[in-house]
Image (tube, rainbow, N blue to C red; front, side):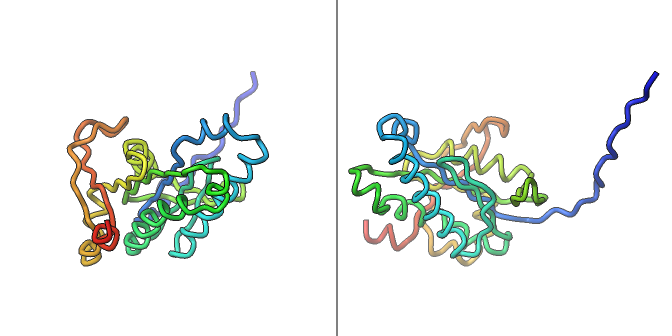
Length: 197
């Protein structure tokens, strides 16, 4: 009888890093894909993703991946404010995308931000992060309405003095899949945007 050889388990003491995770998702991308010719849709998505990636990188974020119409990035926890700034800026950057304007298309995004511990690795040549903040940012993004940025309570706690430059409206408790019915979230906007609205 042949004995199966198992791969050794990875070390369990891999250090984790406190980060703020940002997930930006384009609203209505499936209807765009159905309405536009494939080549035009591809160009639009390429421009959209490139603008969001550059937005995150300009504020010192590490882009992890993008999947068609969504961009995932993270910042060290000490740079949570930069992550929030990037998330808020994504709305305007998507709305002002030149190709979308030429097509008469209004691009809107929704954003989720979560803070916590992750372990980072390079997988398939791409940086990746594993941990609950990645999932939590996804759930917050899913719960956000078009044009909204939702952040968890840990993001708010990390902002410190920078919180004064934001308008944060506490949402009622959210029922987020996998996280239960008692999730606290804040709808964020900048005080500059609030003053000009």
